[in-house]
Length: 91
Image 1 (cartoon, one colour):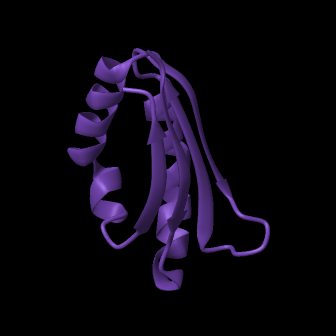
Image 2 (cartoon, rainbow, N blue to C red):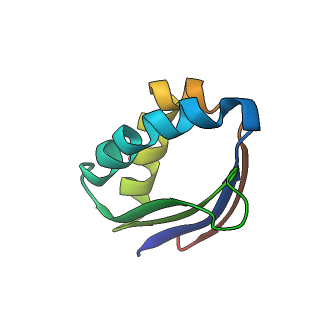
């Protein structure tokens, strides 16, 4: 069953440029993962510290593999102070 994660991240203003500079690599790494069907992270038009997130993976195994990779990545370190607000649908 497809897994969808949707929501946003809120970035501290003082970390905004560092996160933006690493975002492209994070997106590309995720899109290259087996089972990733869709992955978008877009800066909000009204609040530049908010990034809207949409993830779709083919199944729970692909989603779990993604979560494990991200937790062990440089992205996890860079975004440790980011507030995450997500809703997960699927298994």
